[in-house]
Amino acid sequence: MKYRIPFSSKSIDYTEEEMLVIKDTITSLNILTMGNKITEFENKFENFIGKKNAFAVNSATSALELTAQLCNFKKNDEVIIPTHTYTSSCYPFIKNGAKIVWADIDLDTRVVSDESIINKLTKNTKAVVVPHLYGYFKDVRTLKEILNTKNVLLIEDAAQAIGTSIGDDKVGTFGDFSIFSFHSHKNITTLGEGGMLIVDNEEISKEIPKLRHNGHCDFDYSRNEYWKPAMGNLDISVINNEMFFPNNYCITEVQCALGSILLDRVYDINSSKRRRAIRFIEELKEFDILNFHKVDSLQHNYHLLAAYFNNHEVRDRFIELMANEEGIQCAVQYLPLNRYDFYRKLGYSDSSCQNADYFFDRMVSFPFHHRLTDNEIDQILSSTKKILKKI
Image (cartoon, rainbow, N blue to C red; front, side, top):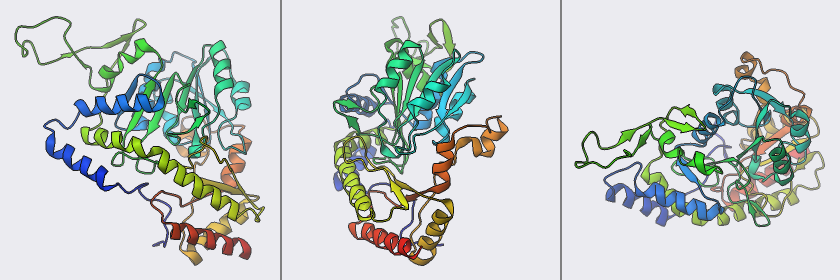
């Protein structure tokens, strides 16, 4: 079915200046990966977030794979992860030997709750993953203090929340590892894919370049000729007497050049989406069967605009009528991970996450990419009102 306004789309249109950066980088560089542009992008991102040790990679999932690898899980080690999140927040940890413990969300904020995490902590807990879903920066300050006392790693999955903050605290500055995404649907995107990993530990951060790029490093001795024995060395990463094998998670120079200039637009894009979201929510406040999360501050960038109905039958009817009568494609996102065949087959089908189940069974996500025009936003609003009144 062809929709008048589809749910999925690339998130932004590039400006003429950004398009010129792409063209200039392609035409001027002889090396299109692992050159000067990645260093420039990483340095600018560190200044943007206010924290050192940023490493650009080809996707946020690759950043999560590196994180899971560096957690160095042993037998019986557990990771607490909310059932309500995207799958790549979870499966890299299973691949690297961890046992998953499901946590529930807070129904108002739609992100994992401190209470649920704290109740799941055991002597085997090695790490906790906190996804800042929908663009909302979950306040992790109290949780961080508790985890520190128990020597548990905090992993901030800030894939959807770039540019958010609470006071002077930026999202991604609390985690032992923090992950950002530049996927096609995110508020900024580096040609459809891309990610950033922030590493808090200085010793671990020194090994990331090797782990990211096939074990490449310099020789630890001088050579009279650069080609003897080779142009570069390969070596195993050793951290705390443990060996770590390398990967290939490299990002291109074109993506990094684009990412650098896109950082100048993050706050404008976030502000525009938040302003639209608040207006959208205010326009629908008379319909008490629809529950939004209203946050008119830098704590939310409204990467997505989601709500939930009082019952799933009304939700299903709403989505059906919006599609068939109005040509507007709404979506239902983040089936609790324990309900997927993938995790069932791995033995993770059981959970006690009632809020995550309740929210998913009643939720609706509206088309809300930055590229939508004001007229299209008005069409979605008008159609939503029409269908809600009909229901």
